[in-house]
Length: 256
Image (cartoon, rainbow, N blue to C red; front, side):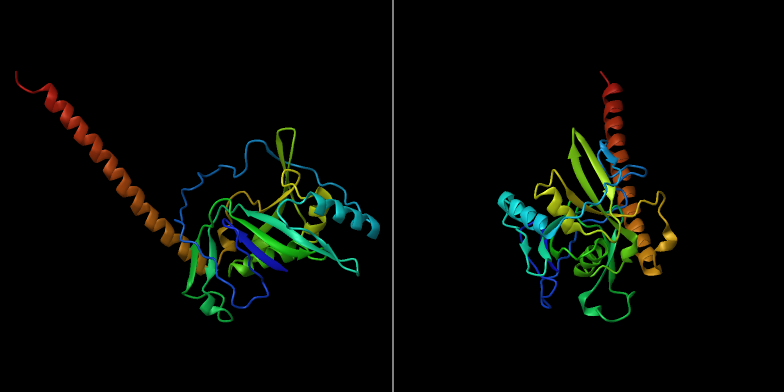
């Protein structure tokens, strides 16, 4: 299974030991999404799970030929003699909470160390993975987290499929045993027909007990930092109001 990330169009492989590490210094914030705000558009609705349709080897071959003829970004599928095919899927990251990233220097050491950092991935960040028809949803999630050196439990995340139909955006959470490349093949290469999204599990309220102590400590540090930032913003705002009021009062009571 290989991996590509794209806010730019770089390419990387999970098999490459010396691959470039992708970290972001985007400002972490617990204020990015107000409480109760849904992360999807108003038209984003849950779609009932569609029945799985099994394809014969000949049908798979025909589907791949049709798929490759429609591809515009050179991300084609390849069918091997044993019937297994490989290809690419793009996964958009839509994470509400910060992820905990372990320093590459600590790989193989204690999972929770002082060199772990919690931060948000940039909104809309897209990863392109090269996978096979045998790879499951769970394997795709684990591959994404492993590449980013994410220390969070993969069970916290879920992969969703999204499609557009009649001005509606439909989403459906995929089971761990489903095969994303098969879904990509059946839907074709157009992302309007099908796209993949990585999210946290829909649990309503945040289940803080699911997080480790280092993760919770990181969250507290973020909150302390943002509390100070918000306090400074309020002080500046009210200082500006005070200056304007004093200026207005000075004009009203100015002699003569």
